[in-house]
Image (tube, rainbow, N blue to C red):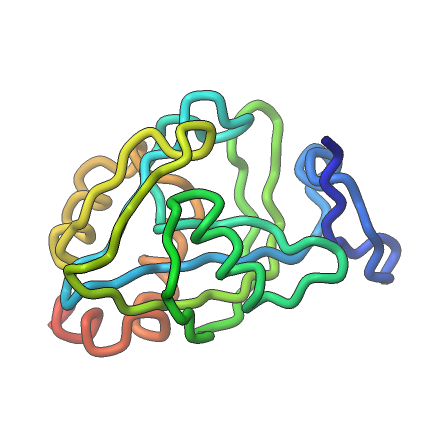
Length: 179
């Protein structure tokens, strides 16, 4: 199945096939979501069949909106597609841009809408094995330590989010963890 995503080509927003955007390093739209439960972040380990960064740990979910899809609707869709999460309300937290090599000659040059959703103990997680190999709730301060001690276990974008945007994305969690 060919997935067309919004990318900038010659200064114009154009539908482009997702893999082509990564091969050419085209600037394109993306969505990332962090699900929080108190001071814990729901992390996922990417499935080994993913075409880039397989087996690496990352935020709760991330994706690219379809050509005509709003970022918030995309966030809700991917929470369900990747983790079977229903009933969460993602809140827009940040808009950022990054460029990172993700292996295999692929480049992500993403303009990202970052969302945060709050969960409670009743949250049911049902990972899609084609997307997710494992999930884990990690205390935010522990996540910072894990990424610092073993950065190669984590996706490039997660490292960028934590290094450059933690206070904007996580608010008081980041302020407490870094003080």
